[in-house]
Image (tube, rainbow, N blue to C red; front, side, top):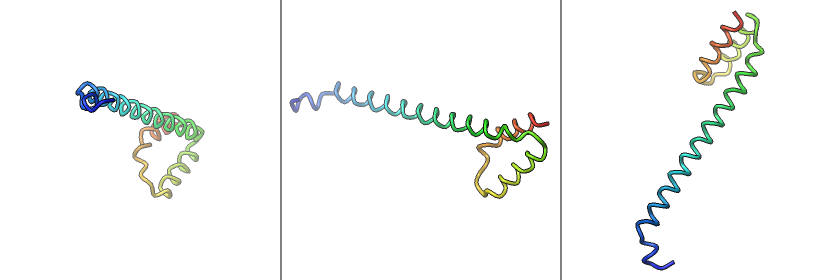
Length: 83
């Protein structure tokens, strides 16, 4: 490749599109991974079906000391199913 070809705007545009496409692809891959993780967690938590199970789940979440706000909607759906 010559210096003139390296400085060509079309090469830079193509590289920009390629990197933009890669960023979108990586973002999609990440979202798909997170969605799969949430589905797996919800399946696992769906085994908590009785009121005692739900109380145990609440106690575990309190003891964990981590931010569970991500799972709030999921836990509410589990509570509604158990009711």
